Each structure stands twice: as C-alpha cells, then as structure tokens.
Image (cartoon, rainbow, N blue to C red):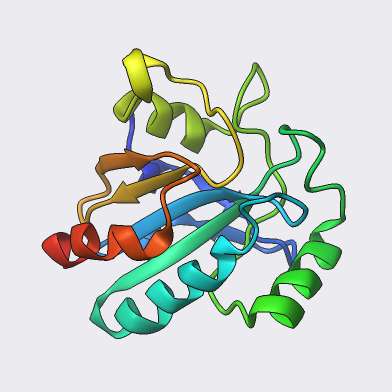
Length: 159
C-alpha cells in the first residue's frame, strides 16, 4: 500500500517537499478550501499547530477545488488568503485533487488506510482530516464537520 513517506509533493511556493521530511512527527493532513463553510476551521488548525509544534506535530494543508469549486485561486492567492486571514504558518501544499483518477497518490494511500463511514474511501467534502502517527501510519480519519479542537486529545495520544 505504501507509506506517506514514499511521496514528494509540491508546496504552494513551487518547491518539492519530500514527505519523509516529516518522519517522526505526528501529522494532521487536511484538504482545505478558502471559500467553504468550514474555512473558519483554519483558525482551529493553527491553534493545534501552535500548541503542539514544539512536541513534534504539524498540520499539512492540501488545497483542493473538487468540492463546489470552493478553492478557485492560484497557489499564491491561497497562501495569501491563509496568512492574511488566519496567520497560517503550517505548510500549505500546491492545489491537488483528492478523488478520481487524478487523485494525489498520498490521498489514495490515506483513503484506503482510513476509510470513511460505511467503508467509503472517497473524500466527501473540504476539511476531511487524517491523523498520521510518528511512523507514518494513518491512524484516524475525521469528517469535515469535526472541529480541530476535538482532535487535540487524539494528537496527544501519539506525541
């Protein structure tokens, strides 16, 4: 099936980032969107980043425009929106697809490792979250409606 560490993904600034760089950290990987009803979750995601970054944690944001065309901007516009409105300082990757034949390989691995309700692999909406342990294993999947602060207890279990 593969590990998330097997992949390299482009950051929003165009630089390739080997996900092996995050080996040994607990990660919360999120498909994000700037014009979604869940966009205010960026605030909670940044709070998690601030609270746990020094303990070996990071949020990784993967913007996606597959749900209601709610992430229409360029990578530069997305980063500007996130930093201006939410002071985001966690990594923001280049816009990707999370479903379909062009789904990013990392998402194919995560979706099969932690299925959704009734065993569904597909991502249903923006702000679906995956918790990854220090070994790179996906340990839990959260619905878009799950607020970031609820995930704190699970993060602490793996730090």
